[in-house]
Length: 260
Image 1 (cartoon, rainbow, N blue to C red):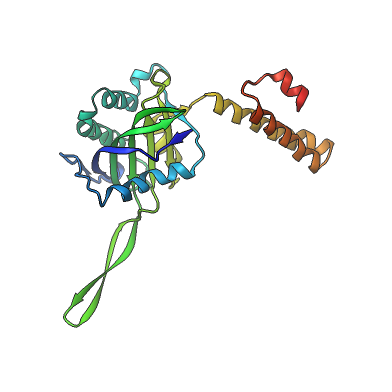
Image 2 (tube, rainbow, N blue to C red):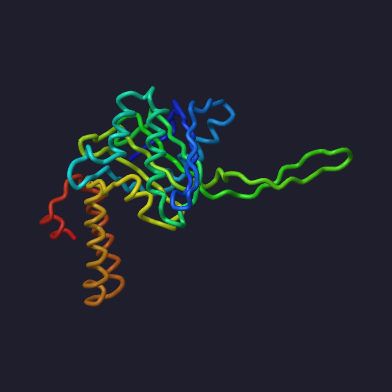
């Protein structure tokens, strides 16, 4: 369970990454962005809104040999060890993202790397790293007074109501590969963000196992209970299953079988 209400953006680095397969450029800013009171609430809502609206399915950095071979795990650890160095490490992260941008459908865009404080996860207050990417631009109108007329000017920019891609890397459960939340609104290449850039697996905590067991119950209800009984019994079986997990802190399979 996370709480982002009191989260503070300590540092924000902004870069731009193109599509490597199309020979598009990469642009790396030398200095962090100077945050001000006007932009902070807007950018916080832009970054965090998708995570408030999405089910909390956690991930963790992974590697088939050793976590230390996972580039993003190394970069995250480097930042958590020395947050003041986030600008330089954010360049490495952006270069790493650029190297994964080989699919022809991957769009160029801005990359935001942030150091965040005062996040709450599983009732623990921790720091986190936020990595976000904006890809799709929207048309908008600006108006300008010119002599006795009002002129209409068409411009393009980022729609702050929709984040294209993002992840929150919590400084929590480091030994397992940190706890991570991620969103991807544009699924033109589902493997690009999760597998190639982040290199993550599902975080197999109690919540993950509970969901997996409930999915098993759902399939059992559909494939076994419904054909043998009726729709009402299928629904009642699933209600009993959900209620069991809601009222029991510990799962004991024999108790579950007896009760459900």
